Amino acid sequence: MRTIGHWIDGRAVNEPGRTGPVHDPARGERTAQVSLASAAVVDSAVKAAVTAAGTWSQSSLSRRATLLFGLRELLHTHRDDLAAAVSREHGKVHEDALGEVARGLECVEFACGIPQLLKGSHSAEVSRGVDVHTVLRPVGVVAGITPFNFPVMVPLWMMANAIACGNTFVLKPSEKDPSASLLLAELVHRAGFPDGVVNVVQGDAEAVNTLLTHPDIAAVSFVGSTPVARHVYETGTAAGKRVQALGGAKNHMVVLPDADVEAAADAAISAGYGSAGERCMAISVVVAVGPVADPLVDAIAARIPGIVVGPAAEASSMMGPLISSAHRDRVRSYVERATDDGARVVVDGSAAPAGVDPAGFFLGCSLVDGVRPGMAVYDDEIFGPVLSVVRVDTYAEAVALINANPYGNGVALFTRDGGAARRFGGDVEVGMVGINVPIPVPVAWHSFGGWKASLFGDAPIYGPEGIRFYTRPQVVTTRWPDATPSAINLGFPTNG
Image 1 (tube, one colour):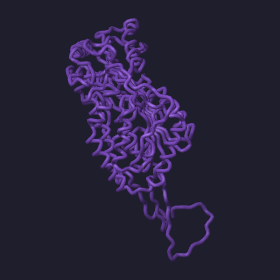
Image 2: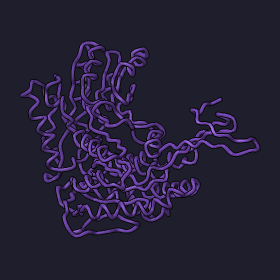
Image 3: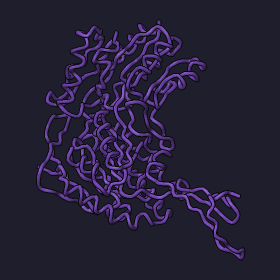
Image 4: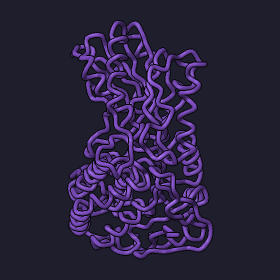
């Protein structure tokens, strides 16, 4: 059976030892095994990154930009190959996988502007004959720990800015869909980056915890579930590292009575069921305000039969399988429990749709009405194609519901009322807000990050905040001797 290994110091590395299964989720069939890195293998990757950091951190900005432009071209040329790797192991349909690659490419394009992004600041004559300037220095070796749902985009969120800033990078991707990470590393190598600048270690908790406690890792970026994000943040910061850890979500979409019901229903379908709901920015709760509830629920339900569920290999498929049988069964359990909790299952997608491989990890799309806080279908991050509807009477109730939720990743408002739209962002305690936009993922020149239990630490990811996270400001104060006489002065320095 094919073994998927690591990429260390510019070459593929296969380590005998523990392995994990890799499946084709559309067929439920094991297609490969992935090597699970030991602490020793992780250490070898970090050492390669340390060695490369000595020269890479001193490379010119023009050289970094040139190599990044070359990487951008290779990623664009191989976008179908990357998307195919994602579809084979994650299961998302090809068009969705291509969209993921495109959003990752945006981050590389942003990083290509690194000569501008690393501009410091300068103040002349802060005191007589004294100048001060600030320089942004790389932090050293940084690690990225990424989730299964975006095996191309999320690594590029981290890697592009990290290496552009002069750091070296060790990636630990999800062991569920590891192949895309190796293709990324190969393209970095082909673009001409020095060996050791980007390394990949496959693995599980052993690899993660080794990175979090390794003395040569200066910073860690993480995207995943909230319990693991909390562990990453607490463990990494206790070891003296800079950490950004993005956790889970329960994203609401508020629909006001004046909204275009048809547009809102289309948005709910797209944002709730795209990529089988396995997105941290998926809409999982529709908050229907007042009289819009009945027509909105009817409009959403009427659209669900038109969603074609099937393998990515079939061009007609609109939604693929879930990542694993265990996750499929977990998602199904929420639908099965909803009625007992007092909700109404309007559309039951807990069975695999007709026509798909019964061994695959498929579910249909479910719609659950009459949901309230306290029900498992509302309280938990389901991460699957289950859309809940909560009915409230007023805008104020909708805002209170959102603010009471422990998560604060993304939120959307659908309305024609400009005043309500303008007010909404200031009322909700959520990091990313969409107005008539159901999935408000920022473009690459802004930054991505939620609030509350959706982000641990104070550093959002990619964009300008990513540059700040991967650099340390160094302030240099200079005075050049001139003909004026000097003298000893033990007093406190002043700016006179």
